[in-house]
Every structure is written in structure tokens, then in C-alpha cells.
Image 1 (cartoon, one colour):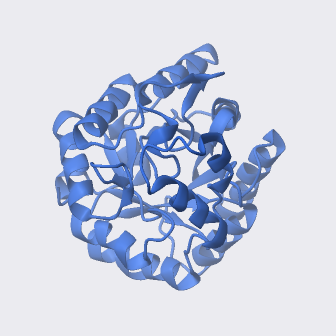
Image 2 (cartoon, helix red, strand yellow):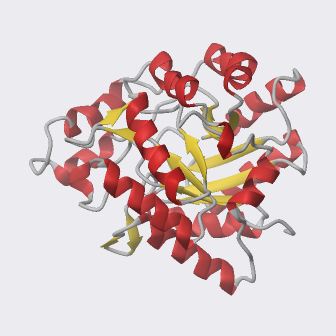
Length: 310
């Protein structure tokens, strides 16, 4: 409870599509400006996925990530966290190539192959799509799991970190993922401080009950030790409920349009800064304080923004 809360702004992701919100950033100038505003609002970390500028479809092109990251870096001191999860249909080689080339301070590491269901969103927008790729992409999540094998995880642990100096933030979508992480920690492959994020309310992962959030956090503490750097994110309308629970348990939090398009009941968020501002209002009322990018670097033992390749 003595630690300041590190807020990550996950600004675009790959789950939602442009039809769902006109405010979802995917063109570089929009995404950069939106990220900068989120940092000014109090985010210490910006988590990015790549999207094609012409239609918002997911991409693993390193040059897209480079443009985003360089633009954010030019205007803020935020930690930039790049996905290795990417999107359904991208190969592990495509996803890891971004990190190999750009060598960010931080990247994600999903702790298992899993179903990641976006297809239930299709009926709400049927016949109203802005782009032809959207419905087939969402439908593909019905038949194609997200792949992150033990071999993929071991490569990231044994080689990717050493090759790039990039530290890993581990993504746990269910309690079994925490046991996977504990297994590799016992083998000596996970470097302290261990950063693990509880991803709650993805179809295929653990559900959004408060009891589940508490269970995930307590399990991580038991398996990994009290000094583990934990974060909580909640998908969809459960976002602010679950980050509040996480913050009260001493966790960091993630907010943004990757996980939720709405800032309130029936009201689309117009920027990622809105999520950070709302989180800060909640934390202020609870007498909780937020961390700066410098503090995040120190607590995560990151190499520094001068050591990246963008």
C-alpha cells in the first residue's frame, strides 16, 4: 500500500475495430497526440499495438511501431511498452520482430495459448462496418486461438531479453498462467522485479468478478513473493471497478481504449486521457498517489529511454 500506483495507458490494442468508436486511434498523428495527452494526465507507461493507417487493421510492421514510439518519446518521458501479443493471425516471429528491431524498455509476454474471443461483438455492428476486414477478423477469434507456447515463452526468457535489454511484463489471463510464471521463476529464468498483469474479463480468460481479481492477486503474491509488481486491468464496463479493487490491494493499473471504449454508461470516451483522468479522480478520493515515469523505470529496473532503438 506504500507504493505509488503506476498507470499504464493502453491506447489502441487490437481487439476493437474502427466501426466501434470514431475515437479509436490508429493513424499515427492521432495515436501520438492521444498518447501524449494520456501521459500529461498522469500515465507513466504507454502500451502500444500497431495498426494500419488506411483502415485501422492490426499490423506487426516495426516501422509503424517506430513512428508511434518515436513520436511519443519526442514529447514525453513515458515508458513505452510494446506488445508481443499483437493480434490473432500474426505469427510469433512477426510479433517478436518488433521488439528485436526497436528494443523498447518494456514489452508484454503472454503466459499461454488461449481462446481470445472477439466474435460476440459482431451482432451489434452487423451490416454497419466501416472496413471490410473488421467482421472477418472478429470471426477468426472463434476458430483461431491466440498462440503463446511454452517454447515461445522460453525463447523470450532465455534470449529476447538478453538480445535487446527489453524487460518483460507478463500477462496473466487466468490463474494457471500464474503457475506457469512461477514455474519459470523457480527455474531461475525470470529476473526480479517480476512484473505481472492480471487481464480480467476476456472471453476465454478469467471473468470480471471481484473475487476473481482478489484471488489472482493473492495467488501471485503467494507464488511470486510480496515484492512482485502486480497490475490489474478490467475489460469493458468492469474497467474502473476492477482497477479500483486492484489499487486498494496495492497494485498498479491499466486503462485505455485497448480494454474499454466507454468512459461511462452509454458514453464513448473521446480520448485515452479521459481514462487516466477518471482513474486519478478515483485514486485522489481514496488518498492514493500515482507514480511518475522515472519511478516506474526504477521499480521495473528498466534500461532507460536512451537505450532504445527509436
